[in-house]
Length: 77
Image (cartoon, one colour):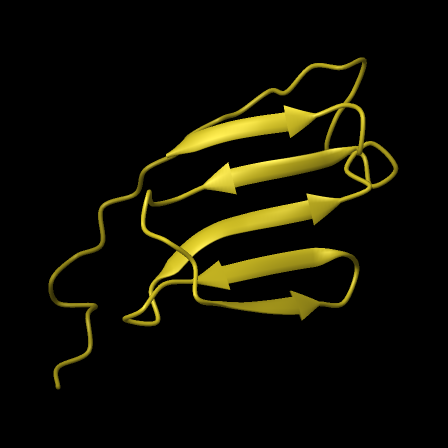
């Protein structure tokens, strides 16, 4: 995953995959999710990122937290 910020247009990009997007859905609040050929998410764009508090002083701070889910808690199909 890559994270990019374009200061000129104030857009924060989360690039989840290098696959070519074929569809996009704009969510309320200025969030655009793009999808690939197999309906997998390819990227997420946050429009007006600094206005939404996602960017402070031209810096991006990312905290990655992982949580292991017990196999007993997972639903069976």
